[in-house]
Image 1: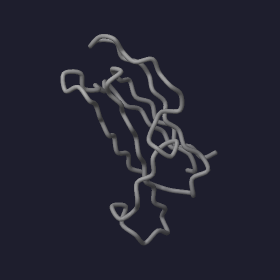
Image 2: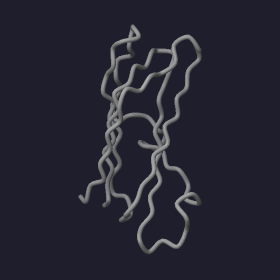
Image 3: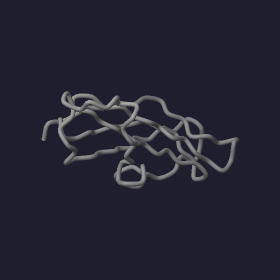
Length: 103
């Protein structure tokens, strides 16, 4: 594969954020996947487009993260970083879907 398309359904308030990172490895790579550096989607881990923040605890919106022109890989790993400034309103993730694409 040479591209990733990740989607999450999340409840993210205006005081919170979700950043997503990936790392890949190929069949010929002699390094362990744990030794490969994390790369942020859109260089800083943010989604492809801005999504309106949730105003309650039950509204989940889809957030898309994609990366293309990645060196050919056979395995990938994702890291989700949840941040916020108000501990009463943490970001919530309902589900995550990911696919590796050969573009």
